[in-house]
Image 1 (cartoon, rainbow, N blue to C red):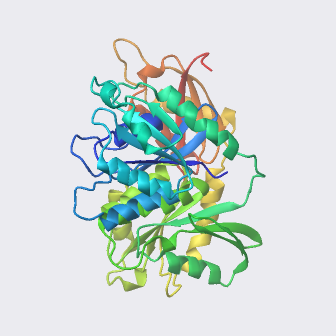
Image 2 (cartoon, rainbow, N blue to C red; image 1 turned 135 degrees about the vertical axis):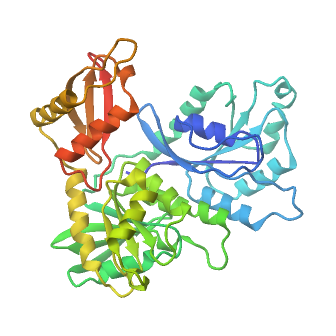
Image 3 (cartoon, helix red, strand yellow; image 1 turned 90 degrees about the horizontal axis):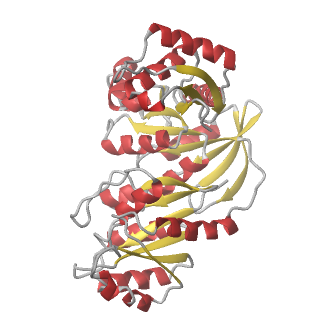
Length: 436
């Protein structure tokens, strides 16, 4: 099911990043007092009660320049276009500004639900300004303090009230969904075309399009798959680094809906930070991943082992991801991709028998006891698998506070040594004995 999307819009330094982190539930955006600070993460998923939704953070809209910067228009437009609900963040401490009025004019053109979030209401100055914002003319207002974590239960309640209307039960589509993701100009379009024109792949009808990406149904070895193409996400002409970053939104939407991400790297240009950001989203979303090194025919020194070492070094957080080398344009080695997809498909849905799982964990525990802390040592009583896509394992322990990240990593490595989890993250959850 497609997740509802919430976009945060506002001028610089009104607290969007802090609000974003509160809603998502973890520190994702970088927070500084400097207006317009660049963020490594602009997109996250939130869970509240029985609802899941995506949250899009945006750069601050600033009219201090003589003209309304074209880049800012594109940023805001992308976020607005790709959202269902907009949180218009304003600064209760500073009061209504010309920037706020300009943003209001921009939002009035969007036929979206808009909630005005008056932040910093813990400030004494906020009492002098709190009613000024009703001049904006929207229907819904709420007061919060992101710094003091005030008003967020009410804000979340307000958000999910609307989601109840949107989240209609749909018949689940069990076909495997592949998302082709990557920064602009790495060859995503060529890869899509190569996949759909492969001799053993039969293209059937084109499924409905969305505002995020185009879904195409194709058949491989008598089984249907859905290919989510995000290749057309870059505007023509020169696109600045900041706008390229915001063009991620369409790819991130595709990640939400897919089972396996094909992360495309340009072998000509090598790996850049932007590639790692995109891959990080796929990992955070718990999706199966395959790293596709495209344009391999243009590389002079075709040493796959050396290039794989480079990828392992740069993508240490995706050490489990298979690496495929091909040329989408010439279709060389394109035949190696779908067999790898089938392997990852099997692994993201792999189920381990409880008895076998516990044998492995008991052996791992005996081989390497956890370190003791203040005379106490972690004990693992029982483990079971709690889900797939990705595989999730729950450990019943004496005290989950004794889990050290290094021991958790050790347990994950032992699971990977004993079972084939190539291409999929695995999630370990620890519960105190008797805890629900």
